[in-house]
Length: 310
Image (cartoon, rainbow, N blue to C red; front, side, top):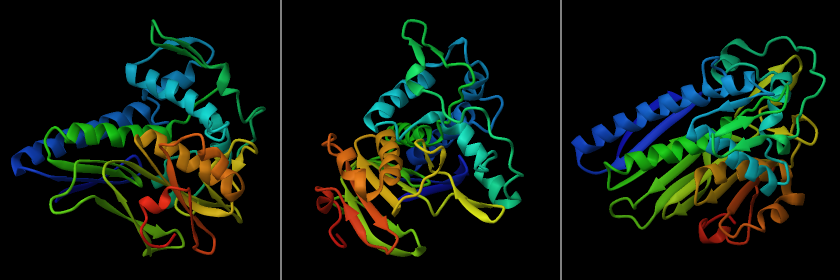
């Protein structure tokens, strides 16, 4: 298995593939270039990104690329499927919690001084309008979207599909959002270690998948100190503040990376009291959660993918 590691989207990216060396070299270059390009289009931290342009034009119709149109359309569907726990309009709440610059900058420079809260932290995402003919989107006045997580999942899967044209088997891991295709030589599946969110040097269990997506969301990774209080990036839309949950992380398995990414976050916000009911309507979704004591929880089919620990 050959690998290529680099940093993009404020996280570590790992491309892994098997195949003919010259083909893999070309595939790695193509996938890496795609990831850099997609990041520049969908980042909320770049004033020149397509997403930033859409946010600045809230209230007006904006013709967007096919990819951005599909991402926002999919986000709208996920909003309904997660009963609003996935809500891209949380950007104001994220910034109020201190996440108003890239995570790399936040970790090195610290959070900025708190700013006055806007009049309204959340907008009604159901009010976004779509014009399929023109591929145009109209946000309501003042609305801004953060597509960080769902975009990262989409980028990881798209890059893996691109790399697959050059490889016999491959996977792309974008900071916990992983999409795999094919089967490694001499193996029956992909083995993915699930680390202890309390100590990344400890592996709690190993997840086995044939192909598809695995995404992990955690409240222990992307966190920072603002004054005397620790904050994290997982905003609960019901309170417009970092989520208070009895789980430390959730790993979701699904056919598509965006689905896994969205539900990993939504199920983590839901916690043990609501997660099973939220996941139940989707028979293509499996999840494994870790609570504050390090105990593993799982959906009914989780034992098919986790052989030890559940």
